[in-house]
Each structure stands twice: as C-alpha cells, then as structure tokens.
Image (cartoon, rainbow, N blue to C red; front, side, top):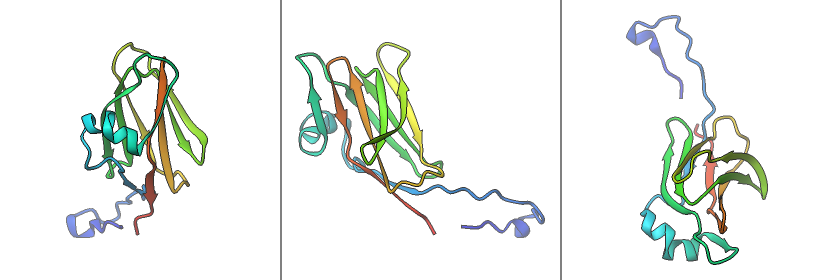
Length: 135
C-alpha cells in the first residue's frame, strides 16, 4: 500500500516503505486457559521432563500493523523462535516469574514462525504463525 500525502499537504514527503507480512495467529480464538489445558494437549507440542511445572502461556498477541508477535508466560526462562526446525532467535528471561517478549517479522523471508517456551521442567512448542505478503 502506498500513501499519497500530496492531498494532505505533504507534497514531496517521502514515506518509507515497510516489508511487514500479515501474521495469521493460530490461537486467535482461544483464551489462555484453553491454551494451557485442553487446547495445548490437542494443538501444541508439550514435553515434560519430570514432575515440575511446565511453562504457562498468559498472553499471545499479534500486532499486524507493527508486525510483532507478543508472548507473556510464566515458568519459562527462555524462548526460541523457530522456522523449519531451525532456531532463528533466542531470548532469555532475566527476571524470575513472568516472562514477556516479542518477535518482529518485518523483512524476514519465512512463510511461518513458531515459538518454543523452555522452563526448568519442560517446554511447549506452538503451532505455526503463518506469514503472508500483503499486496
């Protein structure tokens, strides 16, 4: 989409074009309680290494205007963003308790990304967030 600012007194103003794909959120219609219980069992890969507490998702938010996926979780010390089984970004929690992070999809060449929340007692792998070009 191109902005024509001439009509609004912006003649000669150059607008930077951004390459932000549309993000399809596989969890758009689920609440966090569903994601962390029955929903996770059927639609998310869960690995529990022992009898401790798995990472718990508090919020999944997609901002298609800015091209950002935001995740808030408990009992997680690390998040890995994946594409095709390869780690494309890793972030660590520096504070005990709640872990809030985001991933920017601007200018990335992938068709999807997934996240893996890692805690002391296991991990949770999300479904793919599909990325598509907006024309």
